[in-house]
Image (cartoon, rainbow, N blue to C red):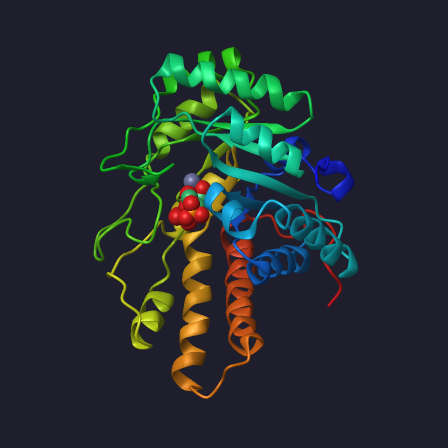
Amino acid sequence: MTYNYKELGLSNTREMFEKANKEHYAVPAFNFNNMEQMLAIIEACAETGSPVILQCSMGALKYMTKEVVPLLAKAGVDRARAMGSDIPVALHLDHGPNLEAVKEVIDCGFSSVMIDGSHYDFEKNIEVTKAVVEYAHNYDVTVEAELGVLAGIEDDVEAEHHIYTDPEEVIEFVEKTGVDSLAIAIGTSHGAHKFKPGSNPKLELSILAKVEDKLPGFPIVLHGSSAVPAEYVEKIKKYGGELKDAIGIPDSELQGAAKSGVAKINVDTDGRLAFTAGVREVFATKPAEFDPRKYLGVAKEEMKKYYILKIKNVFGSENAYTAAKK
Ligand code: G3H
Ligand code: 13P
Ligand code: ZN
């Protein structure tokens, strides 16, 4: 079955990002892998009146199947409307590997895609990004690209060190590709093990400032922005999980970025930690429980609670649209 995203009630990111940059907030891009996570994200955003990007990786698409993902996203839009909220909802491919994958998800009803050519050299990155932009724009689907490499796992390639984005390259890249938004590397990284406890993680905000200077008003994206909350790490370990002690990106580092040209901030790991902490707590404290609603429901509520706090304290996107009536 093929869909056009507009018939699913979804939006691309163009107007979302224009409004976010004008009003100095960032749109949350939260990954989902199942119905409970989708509902946690949508309900958190509908209750706060925040626009939202439902982010789906290739792995998530394979897990949920391409028959289910578009209808889950549509269900998310319907759920927000039933709650009385008019927030725009985008369905976005996270770390798209090539044009073939982009074509597949546009057929599935995605409204936005990332083409991750960050591991290629500059010229090849331009070439693959430009081809995706030319294709996607025929369908009014917006495109995110990436310049610079994040430490951690990036598109199945594990990088040990960051390669910060070179601000001198961004104008040429954006002009030659026609891309709609650009992910940059300024010290964030993917996954739960970003920095050792006791360290003081800092973003290279001077690079961000230089990029913004070169591309005034252009939507910038930050990947790898989870905070890895100690509360969840501790809870997971307390209830039998194995997790190395680690810390993520402090809220204070992201708050300034959200007010600047950063229009989209990606968070996946924190949602996974909140969800897992919820499941583990029920399993450990109520071992007789075997109704999935009783543990997945707790996990969903934990994830929703965390994202509501993040929207209010970090993204600044609260009340950008009509919030659901309580
Ligand atoms: O940046 C990658 C996202 O966290 C998605 O992860 O490929 O395990 O779904 P995944
Ligand atoms: P985290 O692993 O920090 O949540 O980053 C997620 C991400 O960048 C998805 O593209
Ligand atoms: Zn990412």
